[in-house]
Structure formats: C-alpha cells, structure tokens
Length: 67
Length: 67
Image (cartoon, rainbow over all chains, first blue to last red; front, side):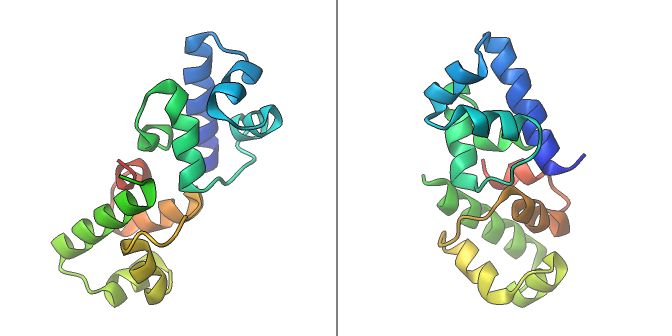
C-alpha cells in the first residue's frame, strides 16, 4: 500500500476510535479540516513536521501513522 | 527531540550499522549524497514518500525512522 494511503487509513482509524469528527480532529491538530479530508483519502504527501502535528492529538509516536 | 533531528539520528545509526558510506547509502536510496548529509544533520523536512525511499535500503518500516 502506498505510504500516503497508509497514513490516511491510520489517521481515519485513530480519529474514529476517538469519536472525533474531521472538524474536531483538525482543531486539535491545528490544521485545516479540508486538509484532514485530503490526508484521509491519501491525497497528500505531508512533510514529517506535519506528520508530528497529525500524531500529537492521538498521543502516539509520529512513525506509528506511517506503518 | 525535533522530528528532523530524530530522523537524522536514526538514518545515521542504521547506515553506520550497515557499514555504508553516505555515498553508498545515497546510491541505494536513489537520492543525492548531499541530501543524505543534510538529513543526518536534521537540516531537512522530507515528505513521507521520501521517508519511504530512505527506509527501503535498510528494509525497515518508514515509521521506524521517525521514532
């Protein structure tokens, strides 16, 4: 699976497990909601500092979002 | 530790464990040697598709380079 698709799958799984909407999660991560939607659909190729921002609200290591 | 510094530390540790020069590793990863040097010094903020390229020669999951 392409790493962008894997990131999207992991973010969606963790977000839904928390019961957060994309909007909730976007606010917590400090990113735009449409960016969350693109990430979850594997449409983005973020840098590692953005991956760190994506991981923070879930309190997981950034690398966990890529594997 | 900043995620860029962590990536650099992990890449250097894995490369040295393989006994590869930066040049060897750059060839195996399909990236420029000076980019490897910058990565190892925490000077770069690569995208996740580049992290996947960096991980491939080591045969480790990309996420492992970030944690």
